[in-house]
Length: 298
Ligand SMILES: [Zn+2]
Image 1 (cartoon, rainbow, N blue to C red):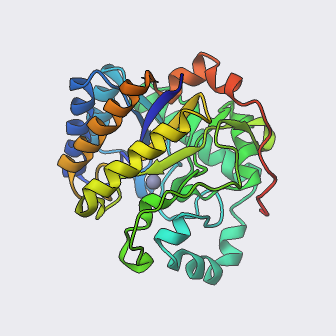
Image 2 (image 1 turned 120 degrees about the vertical axis):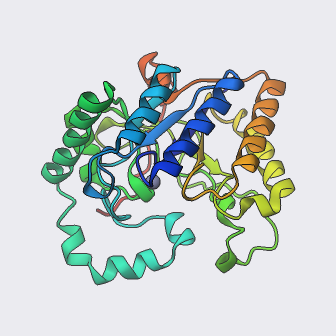
């Protein structure tokens, strides 16, 4: 039986409207008896979290949601490593931007630098939210070997950023895909695995709520159901990625997607949990039965 995780990125980024959007989504999950893992940015754009965001995150925490670390500032897409697929498929210009700043950016990826960033995030979370993070997600799925070693040294032993499928971005205008054909990478295991520095990676299944997805709602709901059905045969744990404010553009659609996935999971006899719970219970560690591939060059 597979346990599914709702993971939602980027709380902390954006203004009061966005914090209010997070509140509505949290309450929607509450109304369904579900809880999410919110990957929040502790020092968005280099500035302190606003009171609005602190309140929204503390409310979610108090309602039983999971709040985990999503970088430190998320000021650009290269905070913890060079650009990687599928961020490069979503925004091809990341590659040219990285090349034009290569020397400056590569200097970031030392264990010492990245450890200092993670530690600052941990301190901010503990001081401002009373949260002790146990799982990390690098912004824009940009990662490096130094990041994994820095995580190990700070005691954060779980990470979730590798994509199993990027089909959820095939609708973007520059991709010009006629159909959302389910395609899963074979480059990584489809279940949690032990990666660099012994960190357990919980790969993400796919995303169905990127901006523009709602215009192709029937196809996206079918894609989500097909992914959710298949992963149950391949992994005891499945992490679904969402953006519900800022990047997503249709909250009502996102809520219908949540209902459709929840109905599919229920039909399969699956359950939901947060990543924090699965880390604490040892379920993530137990699921990581194989080592990940040595794919990172940096
Ligand atoms: Zn992000």
